[in-house]
Image 1: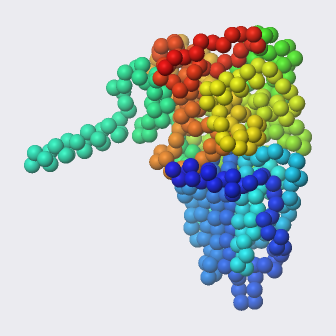
Image 2: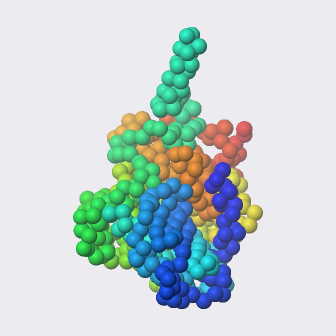
Length: 156
Length: 350
């Protein structure tokens, strides 16, 4: 039932597989994550499809504590607290990824088989990116791997 | 006291019912309920070559392996860790096994195409299809650099076909979690057959500007038999369309059937039945029905397992089911490649 609800939402979540930021806000990878008093609360969420499977990676920092979890089809594969410094590095890479993702030409692809959605929250602002795994070969995959490593490093 | 005994007996019976395979099913009923018998949750199916484990088990296991490497070698670079992981997962034996299965599948699909009469595939069409199949390369690490552009695949329970738009290169990759848990040869054959079939699916050919009339008739049959879901905003070979996945499942069904027919002299009927079930066991609904997975491009597990694979006429014969169509099936007939002027096959009556 949950799955039906989720897939009913997909057309609204991923209206087209173009790689276009939802907001026009400009992100500055170095300036946006630090203040003189410390770090802002922030979060990164990546939802993606690979084959028939649905994945979700989520990492966040709140009050100087960072944690992450990775899920397959709504089930937790791994979760735990993560190193704040490493989290910050991951956040910067996520910001760079959003910045470097160019909006696709409307006629370039009629559909996307392996779609993803990324939501980045920093400084109280949401940045949403809809895209295709293949549109920037390797970029999303590397980011996901980095996120998973962040979790594994912290657990070990 | 009597009440307590009654409830205890009832409880015991329920537990037994839930934890044992439905062996008491009449064989014909088993034929008609191929999906249920394949996806029966509690029992691991053992075919002569192995078993099939769930996606989540494979991914958890590979993450644990990564973590063990990290714990033992904290000063290693990410590349060194990847190489150590690959060394453990993509062993020469495993890779050899996958390459052998891939070669088997490639030859089987080529053979299937060659067998078709000219009224189905012209000589040119056969050449196009066979060339695409042979051009699709299986990529397995090591070296780790092979998956440098897709490093997260190392922990994923996925095998997938890709065509690079930049170079038109066609390749098939297998995720580490799948390599780690793929024990059943028949599941490996079915998985690779499905993926390799994407290299010649109607949507891939459309992108290459190739139109094959026999494919159009096959697509029509898929639609008439409700194998492709008619989503409201379906766009053929585009969003909300299951054509390429149904085609890949259908072609995989042909290859599974031929593979099982090959082994039918070596294995007994029960072993063949288990091999057939294991070939598609990973397509079952997740254990507690809470896992979310794609239904935009993929048909439901029941359609894939029961209607596309389980109702293949030759498979039914191999399994000792009645050769004729299952009268309780939702589909009108099993879709096959047909020549243009062939009259419609008799439609099933309910």
